[in-house]
Each structure stands twice: as C-alpha cells, then as structure tokens.
Image (tube, rainbow, N blue to C red; front, side):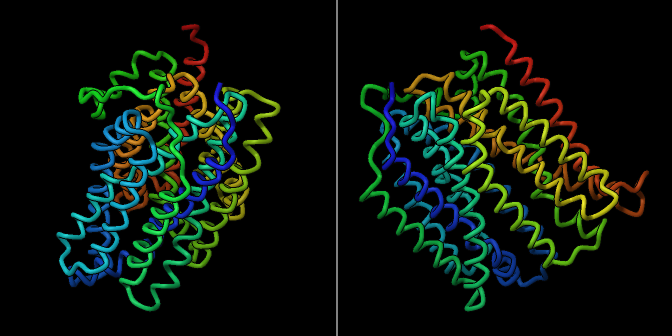
Length: 403
C-alpha cells in the first residue's frame, strides 16, 4: 500500500499554484497585446483571441495523452520539469514577438507543454492511499483555483507598466518554479510501477481505446465529457449574461469572479476533506452533480440578480463531483497507468474546449439577438443544466454496474 508523503504533497501543491498563477498572469493584458499586433480594435482582437484559445486546445488534445504516457515510462519529474521549461520559454517568446503569427506559434507550444496539471494529478495518485486520495485531489484542485485568483490580479497590476511586462513576469515565475521543482520535487513513480512506452497508446484516440478495458472508467468518461461542456458555460457567457440580463458593471463582474475563486478554494481545501469522513466518493459525486444542476437552473431562470450569489454558492459546492470522480477513476486504474489516465482526461478537456465555447456563445447570441424566437438570455445555462442531469444519469448507471 502507498504511504503518505506529506513533503511531496506540499511540493506538488506549490508547483501547481505557481504554475497556474504564471499562466493567469497575462490574461488581463492579452487583448491589448493582440490589438497592438494586428493594429485593430478590441472587438477584432476578441476574434483572434478565440482562435488563440482554439490553437491551445487543439495542441492540448493532441499531446496530453503523449505526455501522460511518457510520465508512465520515464517518471513524473522529468515530464513536469520539461513542461515548466517549455512554458517559461513560450512566455518569453510571446513577450517579445512583433507578429501575430508567432503569437499563435507560442500558444501552440504552450498547449503542447501544458502537462503540469495532468502530471501533478498522476503524482497525487502515486503518493496517495485509498483513505486520502480524494482529499489530496482536492488540494491540487484548490491550488489550481488559487493560482487563477493570484495570477490575474498580479498580471493586471503589472500591466500598468507595459503590456509585455506580465509575459516576462510569467516566464520568470515559471522558470523559478522549474528551479524549485528541480531542487525539491522528488520522483513519485516507483521503478516497479513504470511500464514500456507504446505509440499506439500515446495518442488521444489510442489512449481512450485502451481505457475501454476498464468498464467503470469507460462509462464515466462520457459523463465527464458532458460535465466539462456544461462547465464551460460559466467562462464562456457569464460576463455576457450578467450584462445582458442585469446590466452588471465590469467591477461587479470582477467581484463575482473573485467570489467564485474564493469559494472554489474553500470547497476543495476544506469541504472535500470534511465530506470524505462521512460519505463515499460515489455519494460525493452524485451530490456534486445535483448541486451543479441546481445552480445552472437557477442561473437560467433567475428573475432577481441577488439570486445569482446563492446560486453561485450551490454551483461551486457542486465542484466536489470533479474531485470525487478523479479519485474514483484513479482507484480503478493500475499504478503504472495513472499518467495515461490523466493524459487522456487532459485530451478530453482540450476536446471539450473546442466544442463548448461555440455552443454556449452561439446559443446565447441566438436567444438574445433581434431575431430571437424567444428572448431567453439564460439559454446556455439551461443547456448546461440538462447536460449535467444527463451526466448524473450516466454516472448512476455506471455505479450500478457490477463489472
């Protein structure tokens, strides 16, 4: 049985926090940089921003499984350190580019090397036991959320000194993270748990085909896809929805996003650990999806803006389902295939990033435009709620299987 490695857990949490903060540093100034490079207004820059996100997602989908399989063969440490080095060089590259083409190249490179979270998740599986696996996954999910709170705040502050300064800061932060990992992050994958590298399993389709050998994982993956698509409704249309329906200001939207971030950290750092003492992972997953569905439906039909804040509380509480599902699927996989599992999940997240934003923004635009059959700004959240209910039904069917 695996022993608990507190030191390794601390290093993983710190690495994920710093890496995510570095990633979020340049979010506030990316629109201005794109606008300068193409010599156009923010509206035009937004379209380029969408294609930059597309380029990142395509590369993540294509390469996440490869990096996950490499970590199963050579260990988590070298893959994680190479990923951090790639991201550091990419940020430096984007800081000094004067051509939008090279900005696309930079985002593609970031998508290829964006394996830190998947490899960190595999490391958690390496060092955890059945008793603490869910709690440990909650810690790195909290670190991910904390990084996205810290990063944009620092990036917005540094952006006052120049649009390229946050990119340089992100590069420095990522390189410092690399040095930190090099000095203090121990290898978590034992030699006896490593396996040979196979190209047929190192691509997203091959990896997913291999996962079909594990009935519970295979059936849950479909539910995870629907959950991921539904979750994209928040980042895709939250700002548009609150402006359209309730005339929120930029400041209030910013407060709501900070509220989401703080709640996410509290849920993952405290609530997940508390619930593991009283309910099983499966019960936690079901409870989480019920909360998510309730949150989405409240967003969709809210007639008063004050309802959005308790709905956010319910919705963020529902994020316990993601941590529980990570733990359930990790428990169903052999020790020497944890990297492949996390890489496959990373590929799926890249795939849903290609599908979900156009689906959510298009439905919102259709039902709020001048030719809308029915004016309904909450349509995207209704779609998300339905997808969440479908995921719940699929998940409960999976849990009822005996194989």
